[in-house]
Image 1 (cartoon, rainbow, N blue to C red):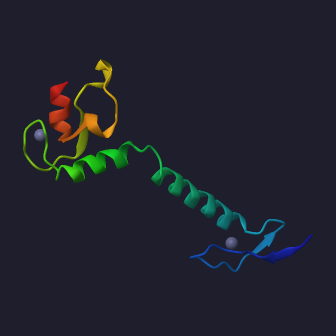
Image 2: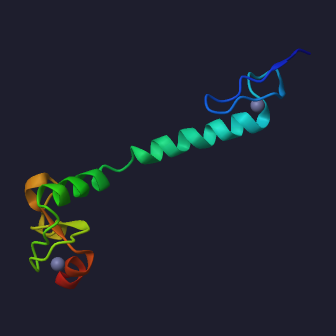
Image 3: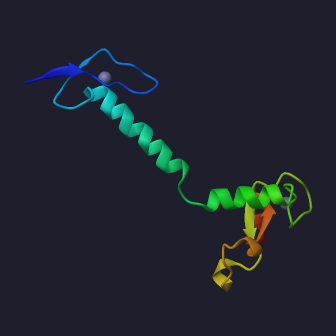
Length: 101
Ligand SMILES: [Zn+2]
Ligand SMILES: [Zn+2]
């Protein structure tokens, strides 16, 4: 059985000894968790698209005309065949969006 110093994490050196694996159990668990965070950050695509729509329209809600839009609304409802492409989206307040139904 060989014991080697744990490789640790880039931002967190470790003084534990790791058996067989290259990292001790706690570093390995931490590394897995950090990986998960990265995957979540590059997730859906919808968040990025709505952020882009809001930025390009200066946060002006297309339903009430006031600034402070915090989501993107479909011009043609999805149930009516509208897509989530940029040209079918307008910045809107979440409240205005749901009031529209
Ligand atoms: Zn460690
Ligand atoms: Zn509004």
